[in-house]
Image 1 (cartoon, rainbow, N blue to C red):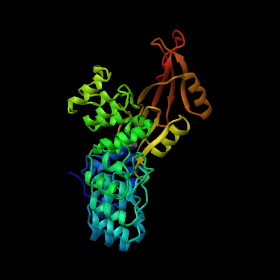
Image 2: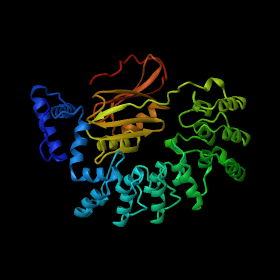
Image 3: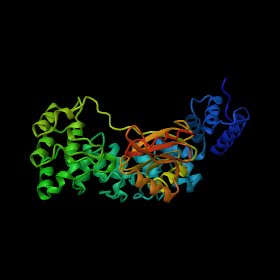
Image 4: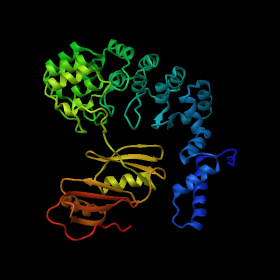
Length: 420
């Protein structure tokens, strides 16, 4: 039977208790890991996972109460909490660790938005992950009344500079749902749709005008988060047959590839208007590129002891870049180098000692770079009989990266170093 949590549990108590549980486990099993202690503790209190237990404890804290009141739109409770703790207006939280105004705006909670603005919240504040303002989130969620309130308070109606490179009108039109009423309101306020927003809105004359005014628009690319799609890719994704026809007429390349190596026809699914595939194929696309359900990518998830430390190692020693992290402090993150992405999960998903094979252009040049930077190299570049010249590198948590390029000769007769 599950035990009852203490009357006032907090995160510090939870972390201390987890460390104590780890010490207990190691008395009988010296190799026990922290994630095992986390799971054991969660089950003791009736939760299926450490994440669920941690979320519950956080919800009972002052921080959690403020976030919950904001997300759920309980303006009276939020007012009471912030009146008692005014400095807490600057906290962040929720799924993507965003400011309170952003959370209230996305949820469409007009009373909470008004309360926060009345308390002096900076309407132009951007969040850390998306560099988006509360207006971006309100537009994306389609909350017109909140959009109007934020603009009346001085929000930037254009909103350029977000990570998706779409501006506010792009957030209203270029994601999963097209918020026509919000877009129309923004246009009435003087916003001019770019080519992607115009495609999403079905503005044929606008798209034609943009391309004829600047032919480079036909091959303009979206951000890396949208896989650097071209307008033709985007028209397929948005299922706009009239736009596909127009873009092809204006000179769009049906064989253009995005950052995943996908052509516009690759983006067509069984739900896509049949006229789109027919027009792309008639324009020269290879019919074999159409797939009933194309797999896009696979991203390994590595279990790590400390996400910030792991990010630092992958960036400083292995030449990756941090794409994003989640949580305060972060417990999940993504690092990338070119088209290779790796997720880092603290004491959760995955297991110690995972292996990843990564193919590179020149493993010997990479080896010299890694030696200079002090990476943990377990095996220098070696020619193996399977035709790959590989280097074996380890990260801070014992995960191994097999980095290889084409072999420069026959096998060296040296076995792959698989020793722990």
